[in-house]
Amino acid sequence: MSSQDAHFVYQCYQCGSDLAEAASFCPMCGMAVLAEAVGTVAGAAPQMTVGVGAGAGLDGVTVSGGSVVASQGSVSEASQAPPLPVSPYWPRDVAHVPTASAGYPAGLYPPPPALRAGGAQVGGGGRARRSALIAGALVVALGVGGGIAYEVIGAGPATPASVVQQYFDDLGRDDTASALTLVSNWDQLSSQGPTTLLVPQALSSASARPADVQVGSTTTLSSVGGSPDYSVRVTYKVGGTDMTTDFALVKAPSGAKSPFLLQVPFLDLELGGPGGRAVTVNGITVDLSATSSFAAFPGVYSATAQGNALLASDTETGVITPGATTDDVTFAAPQLASGAQDAVQAQVKQQLDTCAQSSDADPSGCPFYVNTASIAGNVTSVQWSITTYPTVTVDAESAPTADTQATISDPSDDGVAHYDATYTDYTGATQTTSGDISFGVNGSATASGSDISITYF
Image 1 (cartoon, rainbow, N blue to C red):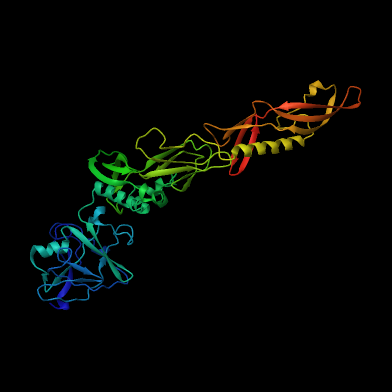
Image 2 (spheres, rainbow, N blue to C red; image 1 turned 120 degrees about the vertical axis):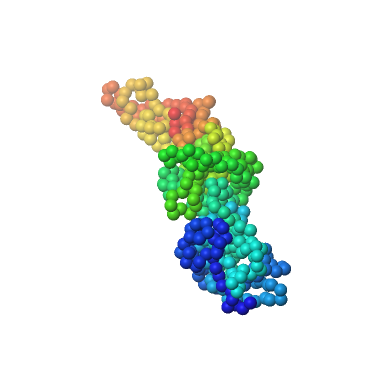
């Protein structure tokens, strides 16, 4: 066999019949041929020969480096093959070629060429055809920097179940961008609601991703006006918890990468009780000012309510339970941060000192005042001083908000403010009077980072 005797021909991936190079349809079964979509891998021109014999891989095809070597009897030759055909219908991009376990709808791609020698298939008979088709699978060769990478793609038409399987396979390798290409109207959905958690970082930890995925039965639905066409039941585990979810699919519009697309396959992650603190979920900052519900992939989610000067941080982990009516991640009852008591006491002292700088009989926002009704005249000014600062008690709110994270109380009312008041009596004479005012401090406190704000009741 000489290298000039070897040439490429196409075969129909559905029935295996020979195809002319420019054929648009299979002459035997009528299957459309995507020949016009076939291109070549830029920069790759691998050495390739094919044969059948002992030691051959893939049922008679041996792959070695950039060559595919064949042997038959004592004959062993290598020929320069043209660049391998690559379909632009490969999923998403050449960096992610699906494996056989992915069950990706390989029927979307044109078949690879089968090498013949002297007009007869190498090895002869049905075995050579099985070698060329690899028992109903495609051998995909991808040129990367002048090298060759090979993957086996399961053949056969795409099904709703295979698309769901591909979706979970994408999530399993944290390729969320690829998973989202299997979602119907994703561009529209992403502009309608919070998609904060629909990013790779959400599943960057392998332990957060769904595992032991089993794609079950497919139910054909009577779709009307945009409702789903199919429902596929899937069982899987997240964080060791068994889950069962039904995924809806619709028939894809013309030109889509898959004949079926998932219809809003996301779950809702509900967060409860962060108490006005900033929150991250799997390391992603989420905005709880408008909603506590976020679209998310199936997975394990660790939420952290960031600590501040008043409240300690809290990290809770949960999984999304489909159809649940309770929060998926609920924070524990808030606890005071270390040093919060002393920090509030210092803040109270600072604010009381500010109050004492006022010359008003009733300083605004302060817990003490002079009862002017008890003075026989018109009070013109007051000089204040704090002789005893109250000892306050600080308690974390059981259900804190952004406005009230802790309560402040002084049950003993042990604060004392001294005043020297100047007033004009009824005769027009200027008079002075002094006294002490006992007071307590009751109010609320909030913190942003290390800054504490106190409001007195």
